[in-house]
Amino acid sequence: MKIDIITIFPKMFGPVLNESIVKRAQEKKKVKIAVHDLRDYTLDKHRKVDDRPFGGGSGMVLTAEPIFRAVEKIKSQGRLSVRQAGKATKPHVVLLCPQGEKLTQKKAKTLAKRKHLILICGHYEGVDERVKENLVDEQVSIGDYVLTGGELAAMVLVDCLVRLVPGVLGDKNSLNFESFEGNLLEYPQYTRPANFRGMDVPEVLLSGNHQKIAAWRKKEAIKKTKKLRPDLLKLKN
Ligand code: ADE
Image (tube, rainbow, N blue to C red):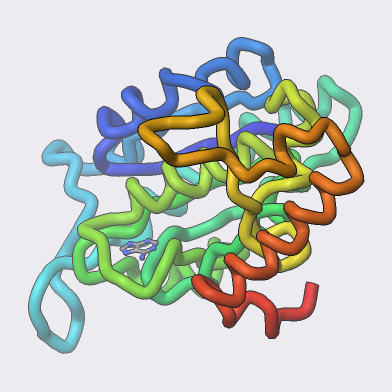
């Protein structure tokens, strides 16, 4: 999977992309992530990426020109490498903004199937509507709250997608029994010691009886979901 990120704050990404599983996924060549500074695609000497909204109002709006130029450049480079690889992988362009479709595990699984994503980080009071109408394939939000920009949202999305790419997580099972699978939260987990400050691990987990353990986990996952996230139980898969 290839992910290109277009942002006015490229330096924000280093600490997240160069740590932990996301770093390892890149080292293992499971994903290729490139961060592009939107200002590199401006045409004026001040490298201006925003302007005042037509019709008045507060704040600034990201202009269409550098965003179109950045996406076109990335797409044209992609076409070259695609031709070399001999198969077509049309990039899917995603704008991170609060108006987008809310990111869920289901949405992440759909996006993780894409071979090439271009993520645009929205900013200020918004992005020129012509970007949304003519350049972007879909808009994604990470929740119903407003961030100062799409950068943190893009990092959340990348983190969430990278772990779904085949071969990134070592243990195959760790994807099967996690929260949101089958619209359930994950069952309670314990590790050593079996008794910590007088608090015991449930007896069944020490029994070695795998059938009993599986049944207990299912029951506890349902109990936990009913208590903490009853809304999940109403969802269709
Ligand atoms: N930009 C600002 N707020 C956002 C959100 N909630 N999700 C995605 N991008 C955003």
